[in-house]
Each structure stands twice: as C-alpha cells, then as structure tokens.
Length: 114
Length: 112
Image 1 (spheres, chains in turn red, green):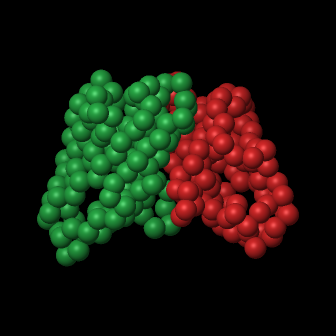
Image 2 (tube, rainbow over the protein chains, first blue to last red):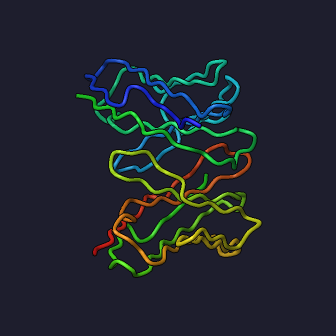
C-alpha cells in the first residue's frame, strides 16, 4: 500500500502571499489531520477532516484553513503569510473511525517564508 | 486541553546500552499513546503504540509501558544501534479528540 503523499515537498514564499499544500492519504483512509512542526513549538495540531467535514480544530488563527475532497485528499491553505509560518507542515492519515485511531504521517512540506 | 511532557530532551548512549524516554500526560480521558521516530528530513514514523487497557507492549527491541494511575508512559529501547539515532516523540489522544498531543521530543544519539 502506498503511504501518505504530500506536495510540494518544498516551498518558498514571501510575506503576505498565500499558499496551498496538498495531502493524499493512504488508500481507504478517510481521515486527514494536519500538523505544524517548528523547533520552538514542536508538533502542533492544526485540524482534522473526515468525510469532507472538519471534526476538530487546533488553536491557530483563521488564516489557516483546510478542506477535504470526496476522494479523501485534503488541502490546507495559509493566507497572508507571516515569517512565523515557516515550518514543516505534516499531514497524517487514519481510518478516522475513532479519535484514538492510529495516524500515519507523510514526509511533510517544508515552507519557508521570506 | 491535554498537556504532554517528555524527558529527557537529549539522550546519548553507547551502542548496546538501553535507552529510556519518559512522558507524562494530564488528561485522564486520553486512552491512546503512540511513539514516533523522526529522522532528519522525514516525517514521523510510528514505532509502537499502546492503548489504556494494556500496561505493557513489546516489539523486538522496543517496549512501552503505561501507568494510568500516575499518568505516565515510557519507551524502552534495548541493545541500541547507531541507526536508532533520531528524534523520538511521544503523544496522547482520546476517543473524542481526533488529535495527537505531542511531547517536545527526545534527540537520541547512539555512539558506536
């Protein structure tokens, strides 16, 4: 089975721009979660989608948004980029049948904001 | 919300020795505790997990123990090898959360 894939792997943007990241979950998985990883804050939960619906959201500003498509693929968008948004953005997939379901991570998208 | 604390932040051991990483959690509703290994330039890889109805789980050189009363769980790696060098993260979640709450990570270095 193919693992979680994320595109692009690397991205460089400037302050004020917006960015869209994509995640394809493991085949058969219906839940996609997004996490931000930075050296200072570690791994922080952004949001989780299941069957195209957001079920949970972390403590991030409204500039961070996401969506999920009928094929379970997900995108996250960050608008009006700030320097502090530079991070590794990780996507994780699971069956989504329980909140304590096993999550499998993709390789991440490294976003650099200049 | 859930708060997960992880210690130590760095750990250096000699090849063949054992390594132990400890985590505590605050939310008594947490019932799932995975451990991830992250190598440079890669996403976290699940290495072992435990659920709250089990006190201990072992997979070859890796074991995890859980003490629900004290709200702490630990990762034990025996017979360490240089390829075990990586950052290890503990996490906790509950049935209703759909989110993993991570510790800050432990950078493990295994020297030959």
